[in-house]
Image (cartoon, rainbow, N blue to C red; front, top):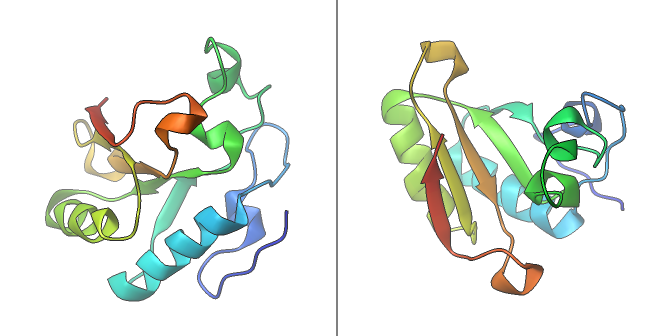
Length: 127
């Protein structure tokens, strides 16, 4: 799968366990569009995860990250709220909110899976 973005590198999108990068090009178009509208950097803490990644391996079936259609963005407080509002207008259908704990570890998960992918969508959850 091939994609390019003026805002994100393949290195920051690769699996931290295997070093493989397999982000979905259509997902990356949505993320790039969101980033352009957002107008400020997004710190990605997790993007593609190989099915052998420890987090994916303990699931019954691989999740959105293993499909290359999800990211976790380090963000907190008012910025998190504003990013969430912007993301909903860009076609993201899965939103996970982690806003507890130390400020620097808080994040928002975004994905664009659909019900046809075997996941109930749209949906929101908290960690």
